[in-house]
Length: 535
Image (cartoon, rainbow, N blue to C red):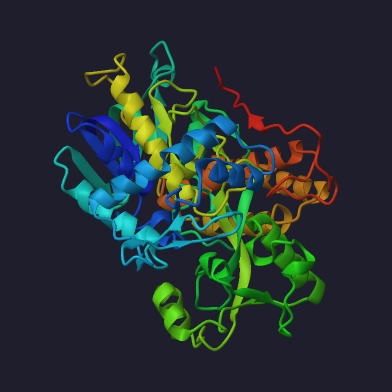
């Protein structure tokens, strides 16, 4: 049977802000394939509400943004990377404005129109530029329009990457990345994508947890594929739990933006008592790890299902103009946020660790790059500061594009790479194995590797993960692959990385809090895991 094969200069796996920015930043001389696991308008970018952190106000400074990021990162950020990222922020915003992104503005005292900036947790200044409470959708849709207009970019929707292809895996000397095997979700056939350069822009892995604010596509695919191919992972124990997701049976983890707290919303117990002042002097504007742990503590102490976020003391016109998406969604569910508090719970939100890269997004494997949430650059440290994520996507996508265009030692012609072989497998008649293992994985990760951890919980999780890995490996060897199987396989790999990283960290720092080691160690170190086939 002939297998469909594609040849491009650059293969970008992932179509969010990072992937689209890279496609747009590359010269039109490069033929680019942009893979979307779902439709191109799906992904974490489109769900980002808050905005982009950038130094745009005369009262703010690059040094202040750097310092706030370092403090939020709990002593483990890479200072040079933070400085590099923050310094690029004004240029990134200018680029987005030139593309047509419509950020909110307000009238200054002298009558001029200027950007409306809001403040979020961990920031000492108003520096978050936004488009109401749907910034990600505004940026994503604008980038997507420009990508569609680029004749050198081919968009492949409903394509799920299976595995990366490297030289040593196809019998050639060397370790260079040559492309990927990709499952066409419409035909259920695996196709071959060859490329001179491969870029992983696949997002995070929050789907490994039972409750998450992320879309269904956030299954850690790039992190798992890179690990299997021989890339190191870094700081996978630092999973950010967003403190405030809407608690409602029909909400499906709808995010309540941190910007509400930036504009004065208060967190309340079920009896209406504020509680954040007992946990941090910054109260509702403390970094996310502190706020999430405070909520988790109060829910466990009281045995309640949720706490409440109240912005009803603000003027209705202010609320509906600044938070129209949140207002409309809550109203659909019978909650008028202008008059009533919002029931909220923490949910897995952001993967601060990922594939180890340098400042250009280059990984341990030549010609393979990782950008955005799938990467570990050192920017976020032990806790990502609000609204630094979209900034990171675009800064490192730009850096990777520049670096790719400087490379001369690349493959120019198609190589004789073996087609995907499924001659020894059959259609599954036991899909219940996938659904059961999927549910078990996400539940024990939530219970044992969540906001508060212990050695005993982590060891339990590791034992269960190893059993699941064995079952899924056998299943993968015997049956034709499906998207559900690919995602489960990848999430089990990611879970193993998270658990192993958490076991190695014998302290509580940032997002990693363990009852067995509640204090900080005197020296801050990254947790770097090395795969068996590294080097």
